[in-house]
Length: 311
Image (cartoon, rainbow, N blue to C red; front, side, top):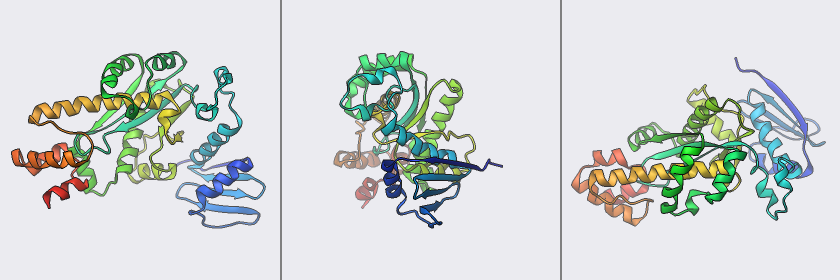
C-alpha cells in the first residue's frame, strides 16, 4: 500500500498568489483560517492565510515539489557558481546549471510519421559540448543542422528513446486515449529507463510541460503504471531552460526525420511533414496507390485531414 505523507511549508506572497490562481477552478472547500482546500485523488492541498501550505496523501511529494521548485525559481538562484555570471535573463537560468535528465517528443503534430520521445542526461561535462554545438529547441534548428549534430550528441550523452508507430497510435486512440495521455505514458517510459541506468546521478528530472502535473499522473494511474518516475519538474518551454530537454528534442527530431525518409522510400512517395494542405494531397495519392488500411500504418487517422479527404 502506498505511503500517506504530510508535507507542510510556508510560501512567499508571490507564490501564494500563484497558488491561488493555479487552483482557483479546483477548490473543493475552505477549512477555518484557510484560503482554499483542493481534494484530488491522491493529494489534499490546503493553503492557509498565514502562507503555510499543507499537502496530504500519497501524491503529497509530487504536488509539494512543484511549488518548492517554483519558490526556488524566485528566491534561490545560487545553484551553481556559474549562476553568479551577470545575465539579464537570470530567471531563465534557474534550472540551467543543474545536472538533469530531460525529455521531449516530436511527431505529435504530424499526420504522417511516428511519435518519438527521448530522454537525455546533461551534466557539467557535457553541457559545454551542447553549448559549442549551439543546441536548442529542435523547432529552432534546421533539419540539416539536426542531422549533423544529433549523431554527435547521441555518442556523448546517455539517452533513452521510444518510437510509437502510427499503427499502435491508432489502436490507442480507438480505445479512447487522447494525445496527452499517450505522451504521458511515453515520457514516463523513457524517463524510467534512463533513470534506472543513471541511479540518481543527477539533480533534477525535467519534462517540457504539455499538461498539468495533476493530469500527467492521473493518466499513469488510469493505466495502472507502477514503474513510474514521480519526482519531476514540469517546465513550460523546457527546451530553453535546460539543455537536456533541448538535446532530447534534437535526438527525437533526428530519429523522426530518418523514419520519414524510410517511409518515402518504402512507398515511393514524398511523405510531407506537418498536417497542412500538402498532406491532404498526399493522402489522396496514397489511398489511390495503396489503400486506407495501409494508410493507417503510417498516419494518425484521427486527425481532421482524414475526414477532409474522405468527404
